[in-house]
Structures are given as structure tokens and as C-alpha cells.
Length: 477
Image (cartoon, rainbow, N blue to C red; front, side):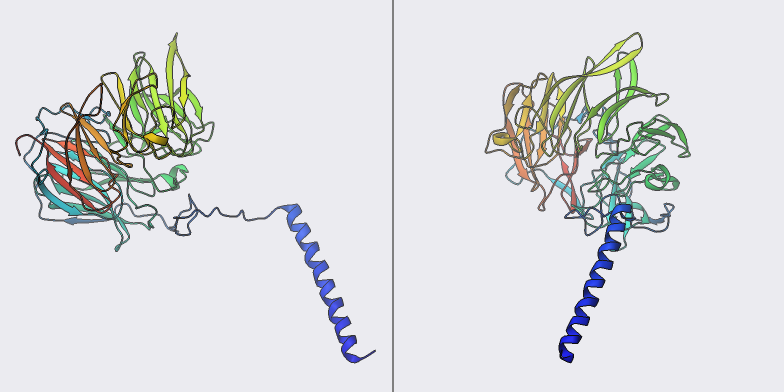
């Protein structure tokens, strides 16, 4: 036998022995199970799996304060939180609003540049409050502007890494005369003095309450109710919670027996059968809890995977729920008997069979529901539509009038609807049909999805990178 053949036989024997050893090790590993679970990779997350933290050290929420030259406006009116004073996206302001504009559209009073995102503003005391993200400095930035001219008054920033994932910031602050509360994209809650910007307290919901950061970051907006701030961590031991508005210390926590997670929806206050409660649509189900204690009044499982619209109260114990990505909508009714509450499903509809919204929360007005249909609604896709509470269509805007995922509000008997590219349409509030009154391009960017705010005849709108203030009143103020 030649030396070459002997060498090849020896090499082959060594190779087979190595393969046998590797197979043995692999079989033992598979039997025991891997010690590290594979991470889910989702396109658009820049390589970061959902829920993963990107800071090793706690974020210093005391942050950095900057004072600027802006001064508050001497103007009446307020839009102090998500969906306004009545939590219904209806402005009951006494200022009459214009029904038409000239060829140039409404007067744009001022415009400011923002970090990429969809966070909507709050208005209080002649000031505009917005949570933003400074991509260069890598900081969440709570910014205070003058409603008069858009000049920045002050800014409170804290360092946190937020990578682009369909923008960054996307929540609306809550503000009153004593407290300003924000939730940042990575679940950081901060309370400031609304006038001076002085830091009061901060909470990291992920570190302190076990919140799992939602895909596309936090969409939940905080709620100030008297001396309490209401939050929905969706953590192992706190589905919903109240903290003291002065100190940030917990007042009560609602247990989370089913392990439901934080959604993009916000907690809504409602009174049903004489009982004040907070209603929250989490990922996993919907809950109503006692406002005074957080005790669970009722719960209902719901398998919606991406929940952005918040619950809508229709009165008489009815609550309308909707979500995107094929989920559609559900009407439930809360019943009370001898102090015991229970939730039942009235109907469920797919996105082609009834009102459904992917991003914005519907408006209930004069016995009807209004909203923008989702992309999977068939022929009604992206149309502004009006539905009866039984789920039947009253009217829609038609195939030549589509609005993407844009926001809308109701004021002075008129709907103001913003489409994706920044075109604002005014239409009459009608029970019978689509009645447009005016239309104008007010923003030049894209993804104009941030909620609209209105106070004293001044309307604030934004796209992905800019916010504008327009004169919406019949008389410019």
C-alpha cells in the first residue's frame, strides 16, 4: 500500500471520529435545550429585537435643562392631553372656525423643525408642550414652545439611545397648572413643572415595573386625574397603576393575572352605571378598573396583536374597540348587577365588514362613529367613514378622497382631517354624507400622523419632521 493511500485512510478515520464526536455533543445539547433562546429579528428594528433594552446603566431622568428666549402667549383655550379636555377628540371651544380659505390656504403662523416621529402636542397656558428626540445628541427632549410665535421657551433632555423604527417619539403629554407628564419612546415617564420646566420625578417603566417595550416604541399617552397620574405598564405585577402626581410614588397597582402587555393605546376614564373606572386595551385583553383603587371590575380577552386606537365610550355601557393588521373592531357592553360588573361582546367585525381604524382613535358624535378605514378595508381603504353604532355604514368619503393614516378632530361642527402628505381637509359634520368645505396643503413632508391639537382658534399639526401652527378661526388671533 502506498504512503499516499495510508495517509488518506488515516485522514478519513480522523474525520469520521470527529463527526461522531460532534454528533454526540449535538445530541446532548438538543436533549438539554439551548441555554440562550434565539432572538426574534424584525425588519425595521435596526437589528434590535423587540423589547430589548439598549442601555446598561439606568437613565438619569434629571437630565439637562436649557432656557430659551420664547415667552408664553396671552391666548385662551387648552388642549391639555391626548384627545383633548373631554378625551373624545372634540374641541368645545367657543371660538368660531373658518369654513373656507383663499387659494393660498390658511395662514401658517409659525413652523418648527422636529426630530423624526409622530408625537402630538399639548397646549396649556399659552404654551405648547411636545416630547421630541434629538438624534444628534441622543436625547429625549421635552420641549416647551410659545403658542404665539413658536419660539422655544425651555427644554428638558435626558440621554437615551433610540434608533429609528418608523420614527422615534409618538406620544402626547398631559399637563395642568401644576404638572407636565410625558412618556418617552423607551417607556421613561417624566414629570416637570409646566411653567419653569423644573424636574419633579421620573420612572423607568421597564426597569421598575417590568414593562416590555412595544414594537415601534411607546405609543401610550399619560393621564393626569386630580392628584394622580394613571399609567399602564403592562408589567408582571402592574397592568395599570396610579402614582402620586407630586412624588411619583405608587398609590395603587392593578394586578396582571393574565400577563397582558403594554399596547400603543392609552388609558381612558369612563363612568358606567355610576362607577368611575379606567379602561385600557392591552395586548391580550381589555380591562376596566376602579378609579379609586385599581381593583379589577371586569376583563375581556382580545387577541388583537397591534392595538393603537384607544377605547371609545358610546354611553349606556357600550365601548367600541378597534385595531389594525386585520383585527377589525369589536363592540362590547358593560353590565352591572348588584355591584358586580361583567363585559359581553355585542359584535365583532373584520376590517371589510365594519368600522375599523389602524392608528387613530374614532370619534363618537351625535350617535355616530367616525374614523379613517385601514389599508385592509377593501374598497373603503383609507376613506373617512361614518358608521352607525350597530356596525352598518352610514357614508364614506369615496374612492377619490383617501386620507392614509392621518389624524382628525371635530370642532365647531366641522371635521378637520389630515392626510399622509400634509393636506388638511375640512368637512361638515353630517349624518347623511361627505360634505367637504375646504382643502389645503399645510405641510410639505410625509407621514403626517401625529394627533392634531386646537386651542383658541390655533391649530397645531405635524408631519414626520415639522410642526406648524395655523390660524383656524374665522378671525385670526
